[in-house]
Image (cartoon, rainbow, N blue to C red):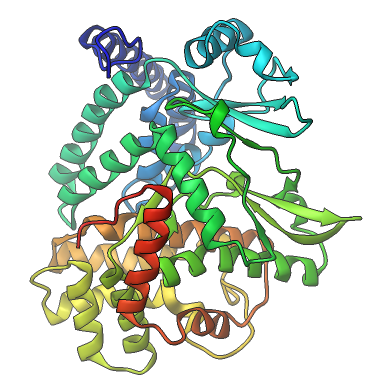
Length: 455
C-alpha cells in the first residue's frame, strides 16, 4: 500500500472512528438510561435503540454485531432479533460520495467506462453499497462500492469486539470465546478485500458450474479494484416472496439452497459463511420458481480437508450410535480436553444441527416445532450444562460452520420446505475420500489464485 493511499490505516482515521462509535453508542446508552429512569424501557426498545445507533455508524461494527447475534445464547433474544436486521437496513450514502469514490477507484474518466450508472443504490449494507449499471456491450452490471476509510474502521471496531468478549467472559464462563475473536477478525478483514471476493466469486462459479438450480454472477475484472467489485446483474425476486408459493416451488428452492451450501463444503471444503435471506434471490419463469441466484462472496471460509472428514465422522457417529467416532470428530474439529459430560452436552447441539439429516423421511426442518422456538430449548440446555461443567473453548473453524448452518436452517424455516434431508445429505457426502477432496480443492483454489487453509 502506497504512502499516499487515501484508504490506508491512518491513526487519525482510527481515532475519529473511536469517537464516532463511542458517541453513537453513548447516545443510545443515554437514551436507554433515561427511559429506564421514567419506567418506559424494555429489552425490545433498548435493543431497537442500539440497532439504530449502530446502523447509522455503518462499517465493521455493524458486521461484528451481526456475527454476535448468531452465536447461540450470547445475547438476549430481543437483542439478537434487532441486530440481525442491521444488514438489510443500513442507510445509503449519496451521489456526491459515489462520484468521489468511483473516481478514486477507476480514475477521473470513470463515467465513460459505463453506458449507464444509476445514482441511487439498489442496496446498502454495513461495508458498502451496490449500484446498477450498464456496460458498453449492453450487459447489466451490479457495482459494489466500499465506503471510505473502512480499513481504519476495522481496526478501531475490532477493539470494541475485544471489549464485548471481555465483558462476556466476566459474566458468563460457560463458553471460552478466546478463539472466536481471531476468527471473526480474520473474516471481517477479508471482506474488505474486494480482489479476494472476486476470487471467491470465480471459485463459486467453478464449483457450482454444473448445478442447474444455482446461478452465480460473472466477474468484470476490468471494472473492479480492491475496493470496487463489478459483476453481472442477475435478475431475481426476494426469497421471502415465495413463502406462500406452492409446496413444489418451496421444495425446489430449498433443494437449490441445500446444494448451493453443502456441495461446495463436501466436495471442496468451502462454505458461504453468510447465508442470510438477502444473499439469495429467486429465478422464476411466469411466476414458477426455477432456481436461485447466489450473491455476495465476501464471507467465504476455506477449511482444511480434514475438517470435512470431522463433520462426516460426527454425523455418522450420531446416526449409527458410535461414540468413539463422535469423540474422534470433536478432536478433528479442534475441541480439547473434553470430558464425557462435555461431549454429551455438545451432542445436544450436534443432534439439533444434524437432526433433519438423521432420519430417512420427508419432514420440515423444524418438524412440528414453532419457528420462534426452533433451537431455543437446545441452546438453553447446552448453556445451562456448560455453566455447570464447562467452560468449553470453541475452536476457530467451528465458528462460521455453526453460524452458517443456523443461517441456512433459518431460510428453510421461512420456506416451510418438506424434503428428505437425510437423502440430500447422504448423496452429497457419498464416496468421500479426504485425499480426493484435497486434490479437488487444491486445483480449484490454484486456478483462481487462492491459498488453502493451514492444515
